[in-house]
Amino acid sequence: MRTLLVGQSGGPTAVINASLAGVVDQARKAGFRRVLGMQYGVLGALQGELVDLSGVDAARLERLKRTPSAALGSCRYRLQSGDAERLAALCKQEDVAAFVYIGGNDSADTSLQVARAAGPGLSVVGVPKTIDNDLAGTDHCPGYGSAARFVAQITRETALDTQAMRATDPIRLIEVMGRHAGWLPAAAWLARERSHDAPQDKRVPARERSQDDAPHLVYVPERPLPVERIVSDVRQVYAQHGWCVVVLCENQPTPDGRVIGAVGQPRWVDPFGHAYHDSPAQFLTHQL
Amino acid sequence: MRTLLVGQSGGPTAVINASLAGVVDQARKAGFRRVLGMQYGVLGALQGELVDLSGVDAARLERLKRTPSAALGSCRYRLQSGDAERLAALCKQEDVAAFVYIGGNDSADTSLQVARAAGPGLSVVGVPKTIDNDLAGTDHCPGYGSAARFVAQITRETALDTQAMRATDPIRLIEVMGRHAGWLPAAAWLARERSHDAPQDKRVPARERSQDDAPHLVYVPERPLPVERIVSDVRQVYAQHGWCVVVLCENQPTPDGRVIGAVGQPRWVDPFGHAYHDSPAQFLTHQL
Image 1: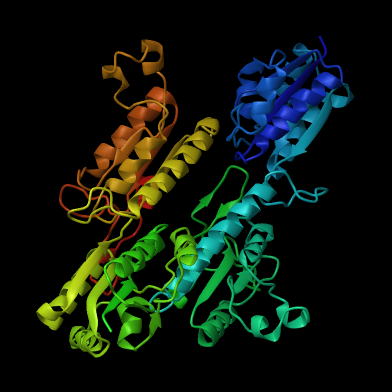
Image 2 (image 1 turned 90 degrees about the vertical axis):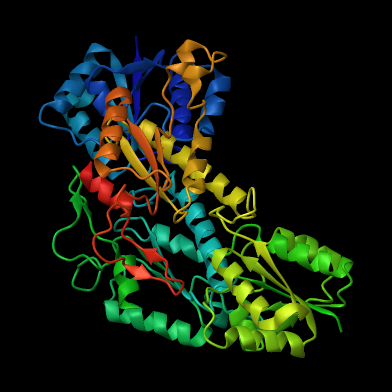
């Protein structure tokens, strides 16, 4: 029976189940008579943990689109030697014609390994999903929009509280995810009520142009800066406005390529080799 | 002119402006012809930064109730020698009959000092405000309800994501504010779909009683526990369910009175003498 196999991988986003609903819906329209889901991604598939989604009705698919978390279960798992071949064999055994994996960079790599192991008999599709918005070929990656909205909201809330507390707690640093991609910290600009480029915008009256607004400073990893520069930026904004809200990336680097605050070895390296360093915000707090 | 002086103090809550709107409204009903607001709490008042709220109309007061942050500006300021007397003198000079200060424990102490300095001519009222819910004489302190809702929501979201990721990231620790009061971590129980005491509840079918739910473990500072006990609790839940969501307080103590993870001196001591230690959750992460 012509079968499509679908899985979810990496951290859940607010819309990863909407992608799953779309895959199931389109699979049926494309003539797949059976749709199987992997439980906990390829990790579950390797243990034969599959769930039959063929009978899920339209109303349930509609609800799935708005259901939080990852309905199939997800995983962060780097394929070990022989795993890709085992997954290819599973696909052959279950008459799987299409292998669809919803995930980010690492999941796309997993899909590629499965495609190479299975050869031309298996169609392999990677469905983009990441809050970091750093997947090639996507404009706004599914998952980024909701995360960007969250960053903007939390920045606005923090800015309002900091403005109210400027007399005694005037400086606030917000550290945002994104690894080496600045899209998420950049979304903090959406928290401003007025445009940052207002001085060039003649439509905005001069009185408003001179008004204060937050965040005042946003740093992205694509633009490395020395610690001293950031410290002097913050001091300048504080001198001018009496308060300062700063947003920076979890991996904000200096020009020599080191993550700010990272001394020596990273705290932790995940199975994909991504390093987790100490907090740049914590380090800068002590500098300020 | 019979005057009421009102100020906001400490961190803003979601409802501190509703308290302010209530004070202004009731002041008028009680016959105060003038209502003055302190900008940035007593710190602004000491510098003569007062704003006249007498003319604020009803529609604006209504909007104020739902406005985030602290509209007057707030502060965290411990009165210095002579400050209470200066505030008492300001009240006399401005013909202030009532001094109303919206805040938590430290703000109530500030109010007490002003009351003592001013003597019987000045009515001093502390309006309770704290997310920690630890003010004597209040049932649910204004500010606690919205913060408790936030804790419950974030715990539910984290629980759903952890359940989906149980195959590779099965244990999650959530560290919650509250200093030495466990109300906020306790609110995490609201994130559960089913009652924690379900085994005693005969109305719940046995099948559902045995089902898994999160958070699995919640620790409050009123119940000190050895680190080994928490670690063994987590291991037991993980062995039983394959995942575990833990909520604990920022100052979770051990039976000998030390904050978990705090080695030697606190990282920072604020002007009120409150100590800020390293994160108990971070410490426990390394233990697990």
